[in-house]
Length: 381
Image (cartoon, rainbow, N blue to C red; front, side, top):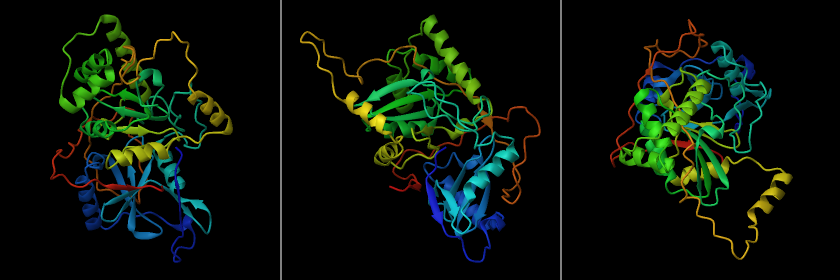
């Protein structure tokens, strides 16, 4: 995953970055930080999947967060839990990428593929950037081929966003509310379900004459069509759900949904505070274009002259996506009781190859005026 780089000069009492050993914060600091994250509108569900909280070499007011399962990503959080940072920390004296070293150590301890492995080539121009180190069934969320997604073009559709969502996901409702006022973007939604009931709901949504509208109606208003999908469409939708299950794996935690994937390779499970911030994220993380891309894009943006008798094309937003556009499926997992978080010990590989026990999704904060303020995610503009 392409990362923003944050250059930070280490404190002088550390000889080199390599000498530093992460350690857990004091227990009272850890408890206060977790409590703050649990009260965050966009971070409550994330808390259940935190594996360890660790110190960093340059500040006693910022901590590293790592996660359970097949996830070697790292976030940084302020001591009061009010700010989350997605960045790579570079030690200036020895030019050591501390964040990359930590991710590699986590991957090795969990038996994951090396994140430095070259990413497979995308099958089509519409496919999301491939995730280095991702292997089929390893429990990591990564957007599959777009043929498995529900595609929606809003406005001119020049920007792109892939997202993993689900009909029974409370935070996915918040994301849909934010997306409602955003235009000029092509969305690829993968429906991720976890049991027979949610799978049948996903099939019904996928086979609706307008799947994206059906998903919004269900997430935002609880409205569901009672029309029974025809057999051919239901079979095709079920096959796509199965393919996404196989790609993601049964150990993926659906409480981590939604997951957003951007053209530059950025991936996040933290929601923007509002629609305006999400709109800025989408613009910020569009892939950089080469000179050839710019030339091609310019010619594509110029509408071709239409014959006098041509019939105007219908607005993309009003057209119904083909019934074969599709969704996803996920296994529910119960969180296991774990020992107190201890970042000084490397994560241990699973005792067996059996899938992790299902985890219960942490309910999102009620959508009322009294809900806690959103956690602010700092990103360079």
